[in-house]
Image 1 (tube, rainbow over the protein chains, first blue to last red):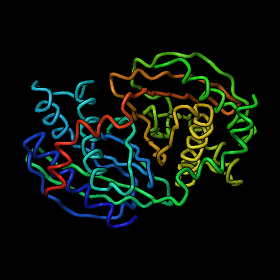
Image 2: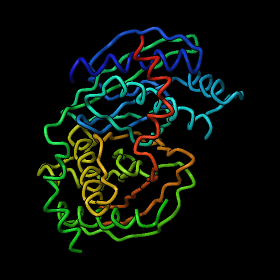
Image 3: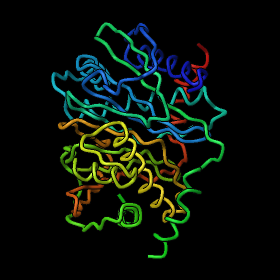
Image 4: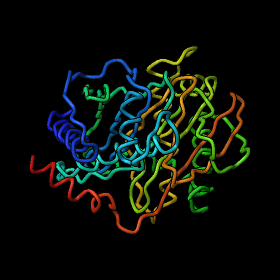
Length: 172
Length: 172
């Protein structure tokens, strides 16, 4: 993955946490994600399309998710419920949305967030895209951001490979 | 969610399984997804953007995932490994890709697939989007497709809400 892709997401995470949540985060280790193990309990997943395609995963430890949701919704949460899940999706959306503003030349558009829960969940990227994983610590606990983006030559390569198939579908 | 969105995904799943995998599927119950429990062991998640935004989740029981990967890669898999994960991502990509061809007026673009594994994983949609879930049975076992799509008035609504925030990021 191109290095220029990653800084906008790091800035965006800092700013989202400080402006929206009044929570300062410290960047830890930056690594290529070789293991597919997603580190924490709850993850927001956002698809990105444009002149690059990919996905961003914001993965939060439970205390970070609960504190973030409590701050955003002015309500005290002690368990992961639908409100916390929505808040995590919205946080992932804000991080992706602000980063895309810095990556204007790629005209990125974000999909709806999906939130994945479950202590043992693992989120895998396609094996030809090695995502970059950045660990962060905060007063509330640890979190991490994974970004996998690939530039594309043709704006919709799958349109070409699926032409035959699409015709079959259209003819049905 | 608009009913017109769902048929292209159902057609697309039938066609993908019959043409790519030579496996016939039978449609079961179609339901609004009220519980967030994703039914099966391995799920491919694809973001969609365009004049509608959303996501598609193709969730497969383990035998279906193994048989599908074995058929696609001409190789016998007995455990979920990186090849099986890639194959499930590619299947989700094909289902989304063929469906978008039938939804031309929404100019949908698909993101990179993420594949979620873990026996207890749950994939949640934003609470303001109630996805439609369609169960299927096949000779290999059960599978399901969840589609959540929302039309948007402004092609990038998050651009507006994030303007202030993005400026803060850009100024950093």
